[in-house]
Length: 304
Image 1 (cartoon, rainbow, N blue to C red):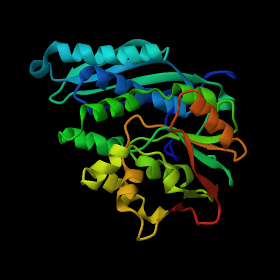
Image 2 (image 1 turned 120 degrees about the horizontal axis):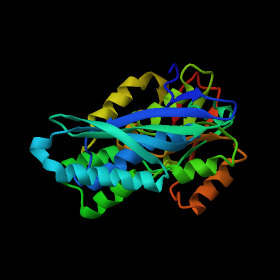
Image 3 (image 1 turned 180 degrees about the vertical axis):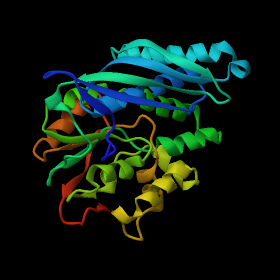
Image 4 (image 1 turned 90 degrees about the horizontal axis):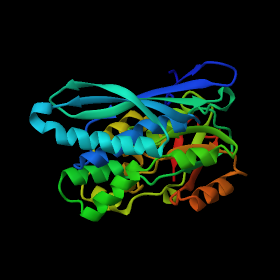
């Protein structure tokens, strides 16, 4: 808990440890089936980030039955169940309560070998940082709420958020990975700050190498930046080195809160090109090296 890791781990034996996590939130897309898919992908991501395999899950539902009826609930849970099947994760049950506002998520249990746990801290000097999904879902979701996103954009961002980090997690086990986290509500810079906070490490981010959604830049330029991005930037302002001339729209994207974002992986420099190449070959096409770890910046994140 001291380093805000993605999940809790409890060792059962010499060969098995349980990874446990819980996540739920309000709808971010209108389609209930898609919302269910996204909620499950988001909840499972913490297990993947810890180096584990999700095995069981339980639904958490708050639902205004009198206002919305049963159809929306059934579609949402069906979408969630479909993604659980895709992840080979068994739904054991769950709990629901009446509430004025719809909320959905899951508690998830995964397995990992005790010696193969990945924490969010553990980066070594010289490591490369690999990001596996493009940024900008928070900005685009804000534009969706404003009624400005096209059908094609909605479909694109929905499929991105509903995509499991399963393949990425499987591939990274073949490489020398020092640390890992998933990029969610604190944005790229916020989660990166957690990876180095309180250590002697610093990070250089090459912003032009960071994969971003084109639509996010367009909507960001129009002012559709969620308040969470501004809060993230304010919270970590003392850890970030950036020039006054830096593109303010790109800056907002780097702090943009993500839903079911990609994994942020620290790996040995010698392994980074091969890791990215294998990820891309296996369908994680936006994977990219976005920066490196150093000791020369007083525990800061320098954005170039």
